[in-house]
Image 1: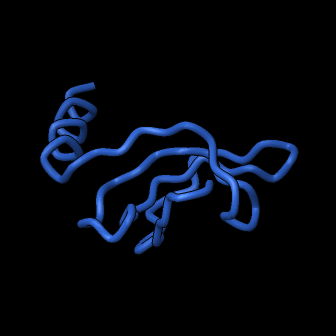
Image 2 (image 1 turned 90 degrees about the vertical axis):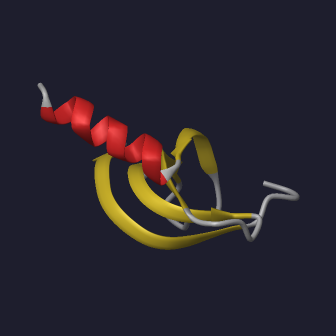
Length: 71
């Protein structure tokens, strides 16, 4: 993606993989040199192309974990 710089700091989990090799991953990513955030999105096998995703702050991730823990 032109103009967007990212660095995958940590891969926490691969949630699924498509027959074409794209993986839905939970990562910690720094976008455009900013503080890292949690990120869930699809990635091509070389992490060069990405699908739409959701980026969460530490606080948002904690709330998500609490909500999932209630299930």
